[in-house]
Image 1: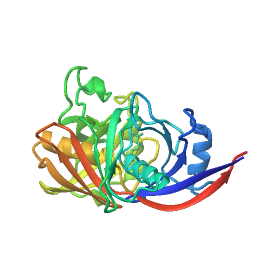
Image 2: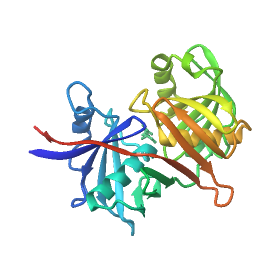
Image 3: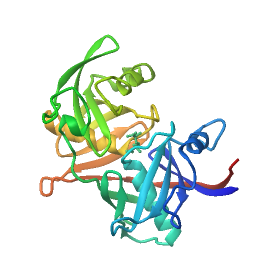
Image 4: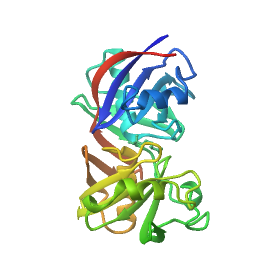
Length: 281
Ligand code: ZDP
């Protein structure tokens, strides 16, 4: 059977999008997603995203498999790509907004009509039980807490954007041996659902540089939820402004933690790359 797909990327964080609007179950399994994401034996991507029928009064639902087949609750760059994919399917070129059901609640991406998508990412969750992590008691926040990883002590701040993140500040992000240290954070026993890890170099309070090791996907070129979580962590530790640009290996995202509604707003691009079909089985 041939299944149609379209490749999109948000700052080089790339996804295979599947038009799954006529069925509530994903058209491919998580095992097939692993094969599709393989950069040598498949199409190549950081994840597979399904545009599913809406649930609970929303326009559509999103589900995503990471490249390793695990299913995250949310995906910031992915939801911008999903919004652009839906607009492309519906032939919409102007500005439009969608209400998307995700495993992290209802998220509302808005296409601004200029190639950028602004997403209301909701409120960050900060309690240890919500991350989840055992780095503090269940009802406590994890702000600037030490953890030993790879024979070195790191100061960590933890934020959930629906999915788990731990953030640490470093002098020089380019000097971090991501491939070596990333997996040790991801699989550390203090993170029962594993974690995404962001290494941050503060250039100015309104401009930070980030490198990320993603749960289930490794060293990606960008991570939208990670950029949001990093600005929240920066505000909590007094290092960042509430309006901050995050520079990732793939480009910049504009993040705002609104003082008015306490929601996080992320603005960035989503680009279509190509369409194809994959012969399954
Ligand atoms: O939480 C996880 O397992 C992540 N790998 C999900 C993907 C996050 C993403 N990179 C983002 O931009 O938020 C898509």
